[in-house]
Length: 167
Image (cartoon, rainbow, N blue to C red; front, side, top):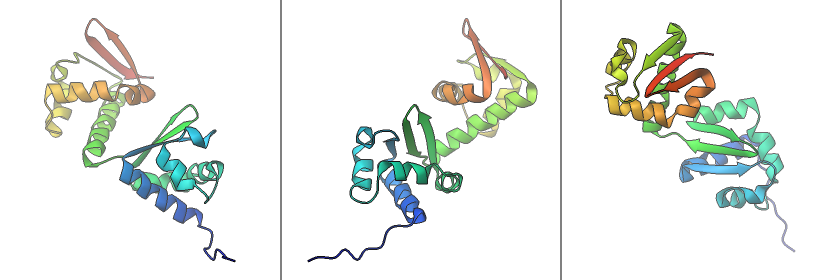
């Protein structure tokens, strides 16, 4: 008769292994309500080790979210899905530029610009110069991270003019 002598994994070990899984796959989707709706890699990760509910409880703690953030893993909540994405160097730089833009808007209460020519605003032109961005690059970032920007500041768009202001 075979006896399994493996010890149960600690929460810290589970989080470390999960972060390695996310780094390996780039992005994984985890459904906190029904594990079978999650990515195959998450299902395989939990198979015969622990339940999806236990994994959710472990990952949802503040300390473990901070650990994942230090490992450059971003967490997005979309309904019952938790999307864990590894932020490579480029992605992290893009997020930092967007955070700088949000802070710029908060400091100045509002910024109005043309999305195809954001350097028309002197404040934004300074941000672009600091980060070596062209109009096309910043315009792309503003479109790409529109939802993230909308979480912190208000966006009003009319006739190809965007006004960003504090909430």
